[in-house]
Image (cartoon, rainbow over all chains, first blue to last red; front, top):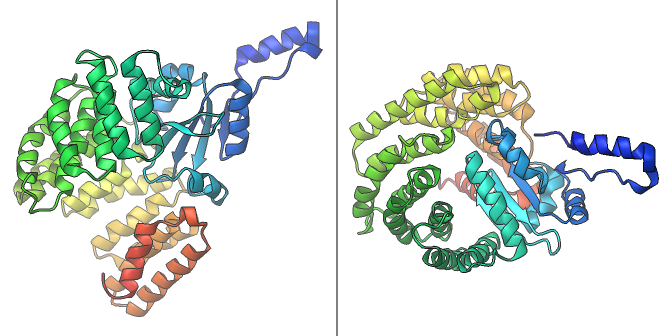
Length: 60
Length: 376
């Protein structure tokens, strides 16, 4: 759960397969998980048109 | 919860419909976020509308897989502005108001949502919990305890029931001793609490919180024997959780409760082995040695306590370092070294002055200033 970039395997496979056929038409999937970078996470949420969930935690 | 619930496949599936940000509130780089979205409870979950950057839903504390799933879906609805039905629209409004820190207005909207949703509304348990929590956040303790007494018995015996009762009990315990409503509230809520603590499927930290508040309620009633009996049950539960924990993280998650329970029982030594194991498992985490410093200090083993405090200070960062310094000053006081106690408190204030404003813990700073002024 704590990895910074969590690109779905299926999306990655799709990109690889389609990439052989039509590379210019396929954009890389936006990352869906971030750590300590609000601006980047907000940008990704806007790009995907989905809400942003922030888990505010502290080591305790 | 981070070690268990958030890794559950059912939640991971729903989480894919969101972008997820893990944010450590102790890190200096997150100060600007905290300036804009202040947080007082850990963990806090925020669902943010990416278009206008407003908080559509705020949830304090932990939750089961099902609770978190419901919250994520409600958060998505709140971003959309509601669900089309009246109860769902009131809920979305209430969630937004609570996210904006307007707890009184949020409580009124949660009440409207409950009234429109009716007794069989699927969201009723979660909304009852949110309503009671909003009253507590607004420091309307009497209303919080009253709503807990009235509404909690009407919902199924699950995590929201347990949490609504725990919050209500906490509100009753927080009331001034001379408040006329306190005693009848405790009398009504304690049986519900004893029922709640046995509800299957609760998160371990929710069950621990219930034991803790039930023991506090007995103490509030001047029943030392009753408080001790509950604390002993609480300890048995914590030991069993330690035995069945699936990972070091899951086991260490209850360390603060272990320390609290051992202190409640006047027997700090019983928590030492668990905390020593956590320090071995997490050698870069300041928490286990900081907690060992408290335990050894209470046991009168001041050299061991200061050695543990040294290790904690070497690993601590951000605002929590202040708490380690505050505890360290107590150790020097116990040793009769008032000069070093004082210089340690001054060191804490100097450190706090360098923290970004949003990361300065106001209550703790006031406490340290009072100690330096000789008022505490």
